[in-house]
Image (tube, rainbow, N blue to C red; front, side, top):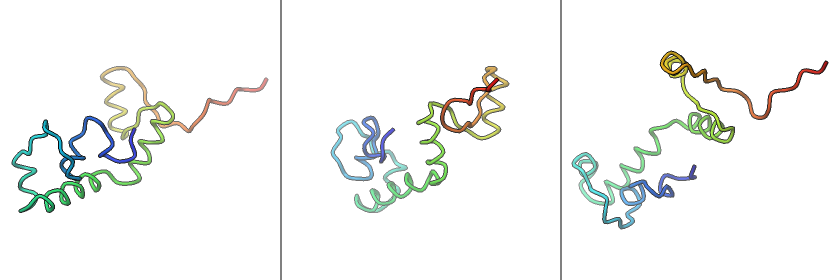
Length: 101
């Protein structure tokens, strides 16, 4: 996981939001309609990407990644269980405690 979208190697974010040159990035009509000039489009696109995922959700995703777990809503977990028989739960960090006998 990267700290910012522009750091991800396969993302067009650095080009579309930060103005870095990338010859393989196409500027589709949706992107072009974000502003009347290059800087306006870059600002609008960057704002859209940053504001799309709430900060508490980003925190939850990062914590799950650090634990090597999936994350998702209750609906997502139920659907995954129904379709694939995989039970997903949001557990705390670390190993489960051993029962002392």
